[in-house]
Image 1 (tube, one colour):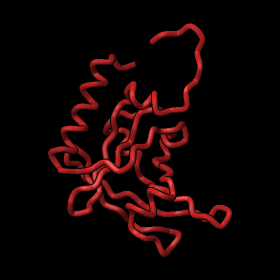
Image 2 (cartoon, helix red, strand yellow):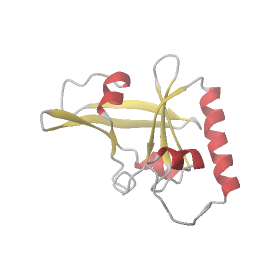
Image 3 (cartoon, helix red, strand yellow):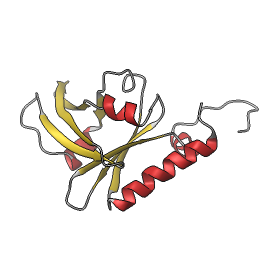
Image 4 (cartoon, one colour):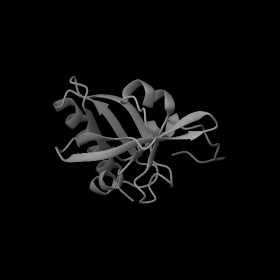
Length: 144
C-alpha cells in the first residue's frame, strides 16, 4: 500500500506534468481487474471514443501514438469489437504504461489531449475524490 502522502505526491506530479504539456484531461479510467490483468487492454466508453479518438473504419484498428507526462513514447493499438450491433472500443498495449506508473486495480489511467490534438497518457493512484465518484457502498459504522 502507498502512504496517503506518496499518493498525493504522485497525483500532483501527473497534474503538473499535464499542465506543462498544456494537456486537457478528457477521460479518466479507474483500472478494473481485467484492465490491470497484464493484457494491457483497456475498454474506452463509446461516447468518449467517438468524440476524442480517430474514426475507425476497420475493426482491426490503427496505431495511436501518445506520450506520458514524463516524456516517454507509446504506441497503442486502438480498435473495436462489434457487440450487439454496437461498437466496443479498446486500447491495446497499455501494459507498458501501467508498469511505468506502477498501476494496480483502482488506480486511474488518465487520457488527455494537447492543443495540437495529440494524446497524453498517465497513471495515478486513486484519491479520495475517485472513491467518492463511485456508487456509494454503505459500510456501517466505518468513518475514514
